[in-house]
Figure 1: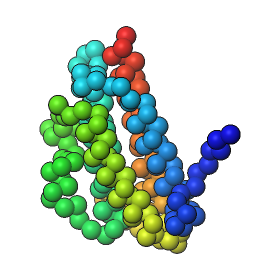
Figure 2: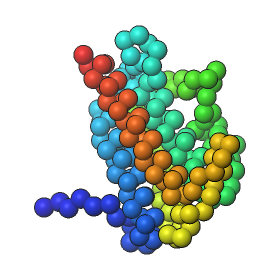
Figure 3: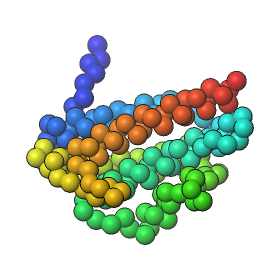
Figure 4: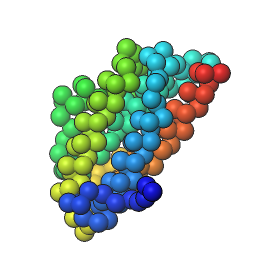
Length: 168
């Protein structure tokens, strides 16, 4: 019998591990839900062609997660990462993503997930209270990790709707 739990890798602090496990499980669920998606399906923007595509959403999630990782590390996002994953917006919309297969999109996101794991391994439970710059305010690392998990689930709902619309 498979036992489900929210527990991070053994080398992670217990509370940090719970947050990492939330993010990791959401990422695995998203990856699994996208299995078999064709390039055309990944680029589909709804019947009105006005929605963000699955490819845009996957890239957006990877980019936002990457930005949080660098904030947690107290570092600026390198220009090479901005080029590879960004920008956040173009003309107040998610940038277009074309010609990237699911394997390519997920390979880039896998690298972000590995960076997150490596970062979380270095964190203590007490550091979850440390404040990070966020927009024009601050957020704790605890909130940032929760937000990463929540943000992924939020956009998974969009992806699932787009897949259903595409198949209809």
